[in-house]
Figure 1 (tube, protein in one colour):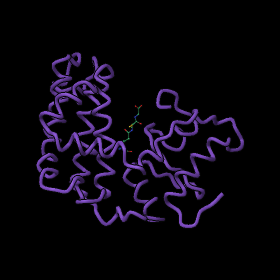
Figure 2: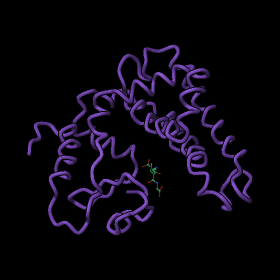
Figure 3: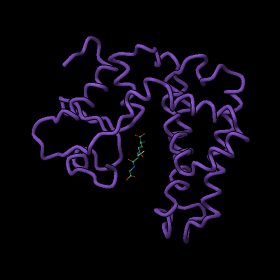
Length: 209
Ligand SMILES: N[C@@H](CCC(=O)N[C@@H](CS)C(=O)NCC(=O)O)C(=O)O
């Protein structure tokens, strides 16, 4: 749970963001994109790594995420110096400005999607789709009413692209909710085993418990 970060997480990765991958040899991988790469280098049945657009991913990892955080978590930026004008509270107006700056970046994707075959990478999803869509999903969660009404009107290809992802079988397979991990447990509970199993069997050839 993001609100209740285990001490061990903060020990291995003081920046305190998720996801973090901690390997048996104590290597820590703390960027989503690098974790995806690590997993897919083990096994990539959908050949996602053949479709990577690093510059678009960079823009979403930095600029889109910056505005998304200030739109979705505007309350966190109140009275902080890192809001748009560098001082004072993040007002509702600023929140909307951040939302519209996200919309601007999504509109760039709209153009690409409108000339494509459903995914940024063509007829099948690629690494770029899978790297960007969690951001778009978060953008929707920030204000579902806005997303469902406005996006459908303003950027319908992006709207369809997200909805297609939300019912994509590999996405549904990993997005199962589990009880929070309890770090005092010495052994995996059945639930943790199940989570490990789901993630590992997507990536590691011939894995079985
Ligand atoms: N650049 C990092 C960003 C990760 C990130 O910001 N994760 C968010 C959740 S989506 C988080 O952990 N935020 C910490 C917090 O809200 O306290 C990555 O791509 O992994």
